[in-house]
Amino acid sequence: MFGFNKKKPLIEGPIEFEAEVEIDKAAGAVFPLIDVASPDFAHLQRGASVQTVEGKAQHYCLTIEGMDDVAFLYHVLERVEGERHTAECVIEPRINDLIKAVESYEVEALSAESCKVRLTTVATFDESLSDEEVAGEIAMMSAAVHDDLFKLKVHAEEGADAVAALDNDGLCDIEIGDIDIEIEDWN
Image (cartoon, rainbow, N blue to C red; front, side, top):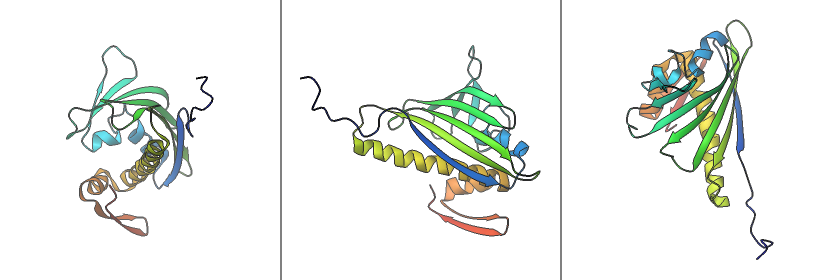
């Protein structure tokens, strides 16, 4: 009657995910890969289409072949050339129980030939989810954040074709510096 016995969810509100990766490419070469407005945006190089949203500054619509009915709507909240890129992303129609995600990339030069990229994603999920469902969404989002950074590293160091091999084959040999990595069923 008064709500005293209502079960309170374990997690309320947006959930933050953070990961970072070192990349053996200059910060200036990596930043365009994360900048949705850049002609060198990684998703464009891998076959996606990005259009500006008419009448809305800093709004973009990304579509991916094979997901023709889905639009990834980006609103760039902050852009500092070569250093920071923050955008809110809403997927329409909604996939799973993600309401929106705010992705913040920070690029830090380590040397003339390398940088560190930190990705912080703040995800807002449907409030009606059970604790078990939220746990599942957290696991998927955590994996997605790490996957995004891994693909960024591979793309920057080995090119878009190496990422396409990961996406298409699920089995890929990648050479990064002196390290030879075999990835099986990464998707």
